[in-house]
Image (tube, rainbow over the protein chains, first blue to last red):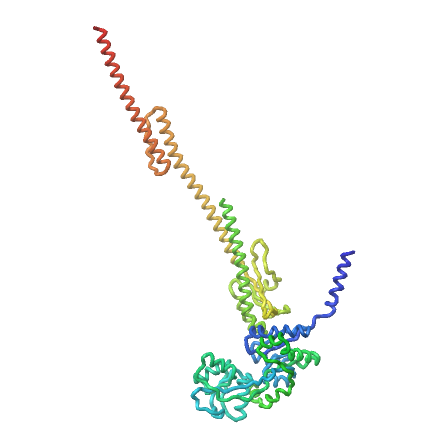
Length: 275
Length: 234
């Protein structure tokens, strides 16, 4: 009889667990700028913090490459996504991701690099030349530079060489006339011994990467996630988490924050992507 | 003693093989997990499947399987029969199993993202161990046989020499003319034979001296008797 009572007690205790299923995990997609393992190491602590704060598991996700990431965002596979400004502009249209946060006071810029002894003084001097870029949808290094060239009506042949470092080396060794990059990686390349290259042009600053949520996510969840992200910089723990993913303090963001990117007129990228 | 030695050797072989199999399986699983981590994290299922296919083709590997943190199968390849078996990570103290399984987790910043399971086919290893046992037993049996034959030969050789010495000593002690043993061996028995030969020679020399003295005494006695007789005649 006592055994029966014991079983009954256990059954009553675990009954709520059986009746109320565990909440579905939220998926958080990160744009694959580094290897998946490196990204997971960096971003998982933030995911754990979000899980704790939301009372619901948040899973880190990424993709093997940018095109696959774009496909997955387009298919709405991520509940939350961290994406570059161009991606946000595109995916805010379809499937309709909504921006919730971005870095405070940060502007993203692109540069054009030429050889040290090159006579070019302005972008129009690159007319008819072959220019190196890291990847078709790299926002600062490719899109900002190409948008400016389009605006100026400069014709050129783009050549994609996989990484920022390859761009700088291709320019320094004279394989291409010029190439697109960003200040941080160019400085890093100079520190690593790169010689014979200089900056020809710097773009204006643009709104940086976006934290955005899937349109199907409830308004309550959206606000809750935005609040957690924005308040990260208010605590020591949150600052540590932001430092881990090399981000500054986050602020609330709205869709119009990326209007500067929209004004660039990025139709040429869409035209190239069409088979 | 030999049986004890063989048992110890076989036990040691079993134990070291178990340890090695376990260590190797864990190493493979960990290397596999580290290599497959990027594909698992980015859900690059095509690359993961290619990788799993290659791993399953590695000699000695029966199967490879990757599951995500919820247990969903991401990729698997290898022996279809082995793939259907439930995972069993360690083996009992008995014989080595034909299939040994190991697993490793893909963990980033303390969070589990997936699991790698591999199966090692131990049949060829078990066959090698069996062959080694058979060879050891055959060598041990040959060794016993050789030891027995050598002991018999050595015993026969020793007994033959001792027997000859006994005959010589018996003949000498019974007063017969002692024959030399003439043992050419350089061992202790040969030395003993030489000492017996020396003793016999000395005995013979003593004996010949004693005979000569007796003969001399008898001659003296005879001369003395003769002198006494001559004096009595006067």
